[in-house]
Length: 141
Length: 297
Image (cartoon, rainbow over all chains, first blue to last red; front, side):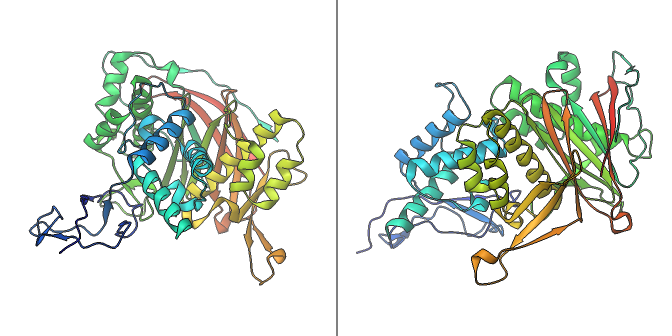
């Protein structure tokens, strides 16, 4: 029986985002993506797949919340300012110095170290959460 | 040597937007640095006219910003780029709306000249909450970065430097006793390093901050040079430094409130020649004010 592993992969074509690197899978456990004979992948084969894809996977809500909190603190945002996984740092008025300070805050909070190049390319709360979970994973592996 | 020239303000008010006053391209070795102070742009009708200059993508970008102040600043940034680049075009009736922009393969914004090749003009933009700047050069890639002089760093400055800057820069900052002075030098270094990476235009991974040192040139008041650290031997203590004059730097203060760093790639024909920066404050379509012309050795 196929492993039941409930997550959703949303393909986001970031054609205009030239800083995106290669396609990456961020599955945390080896798992079959087939469930009862059907795929969970929700895209149509008829659409041409752009050269650069970003696959966002489900990160822990807890991680997203901690990242949001650190972002709000660094940018001195009001408590009621809405920050979600998809919020871009630039939308909140963050510049490169803010991004680096946010990264330092994340490193302290999660006990990880990010390579500068990857850190500076973090654009959204989601990206940060994904990178954090990847680094935590590597640390505990 | 410093030359400061204050000229009269040119004002031209009109109900409809007047045409843009054209500009002569900068000479080689010159950078034209333009800046806008958002607080000085209050007219809602003027801002509305500015928004009519933007492409749909740019308008979407402005709309995504959270809050009126951020929206206004994003609008002013795009307006500054469009109007400034448009003014340097030889066609006097050049419409700033017709400019197209693209990103190079690493993501650095540049003008998409469409069918006109070999256009010499380069630009780079930087903004803070309270000042937006645009640098223009010919035949040489340019990078600029501006920061509020009073910007507070939320982390310990030395810890931040140890994490991201080069060893020599950390040593330099560590010698500064007064925390305020140390913070200021940290910010100056940040703007210089950012300006270099932006001038290079190859993305962050091409020049991680800890792989190069920017330091004052001894004997000059405001000269800076770039030294790249390379670990050639197996022994990490034998890091060699290669200091070259290929990249020129200028560090200035704008409006008494901001540090601005300008970095350009030195044209081989001009090697060793000083770099000149002409600073002008502007409100697009309204006024220009020549602030200074400076030489950096």
